[in-house]
Length: 207
Image (tube, rainbow, N blue to C red; front, top):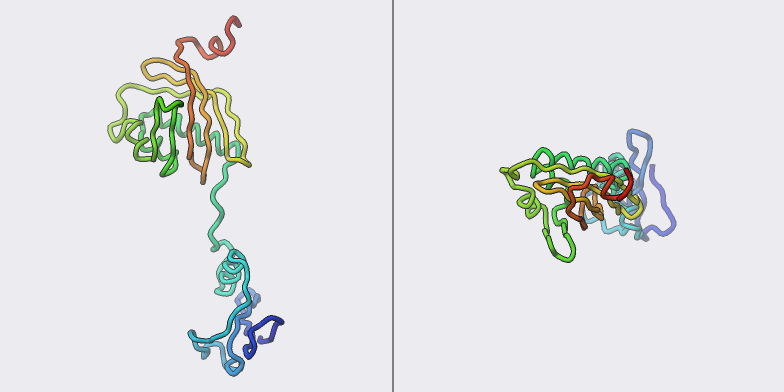
């Protein structure tokens, strides 16, 4: 099927190859070539200019013209919901408990920033975190991470969680966490060392 559209280049005709699903998306060829079978059309130097269109729309049109599924267009970066955020934190806690430095570091982006203000601890990048978490050998002794209250805003990909962490001594604290593409990109923690159980720590005087 062939035809002309308003706005097409002068002296060019729009050709519509048919896909298996019956959808044809046109492209421009010089008018003198428009009557030739599609297989005989030159592949280069057609000198017909398509009207300008936004880049994302052009990518979709190109994919459909080539007979590809719309899924072939690169998807948007992964966005976590509340359940996904909690699963990410649980995976990190499990990795620390098992002494799996690679799994723990894999919860962070390649250029993640991990900080305890004001620069008491500062680690930049997944490789730096891998070494901090114990490297290939893992840390000696057992770590324990327990999340208490966790909240997450999917629109901002920003959350926080209160936690109890034990490694030699015990601390209770909170981490403010920004997520990017499904992984932790920024981690900011505040904590206080205490041997009190969590409930007594947050609710003094309550039995």
